[in-house]
Length: 224
Image (cartoon, rainbow, N blue to C red):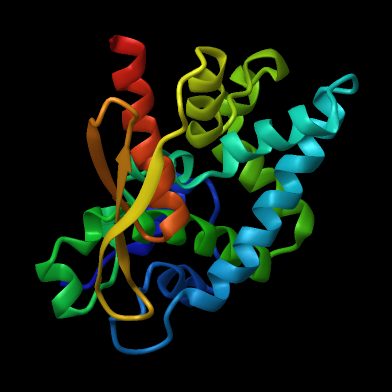
């Protein structure tokens, strides 16, 4: 059944002059036709720029490190996935049969890429000012809540500092497995603590998987 993309555009708060750009932004490379990877490239750059600019003016006394951590908090995959779920983007994705069968419409990396691609599509359909307004509206509540004093460092850094402050050895990270095709791999990382406890997590890159494993480990050591 053909999808009525004007409904999604209304939900997003932006009506496209060229609706095909929105369709392309929602098209995974596993689906036939033009896919969203190039739009994602543009959207990723714009997202980082608009958030950096907004934080620069909102927090004139924040240090470069604080601004960097706040930006990371706002543009990270987890945040973009949450935004995608708020707008029910998974219902609008165009995926190939293999991705559909494996539950690709629920995969965080695909949802994250779709949001960045939509940003790129809005920019190409309008101009930089309208795109800035669109992005800041998407992240409005999160921008209001972010604070330099509690801008969290990434989980690996938090875990390292927590262990070092208690004079405990640092964990070891090892690749436990890699699956999927070269363009869409999933990494499994194991994180071993000094007490022998082993935790594992997956991610679309080694770095993301390590951060996910560190987040689990941090919960464990704080609960001991």
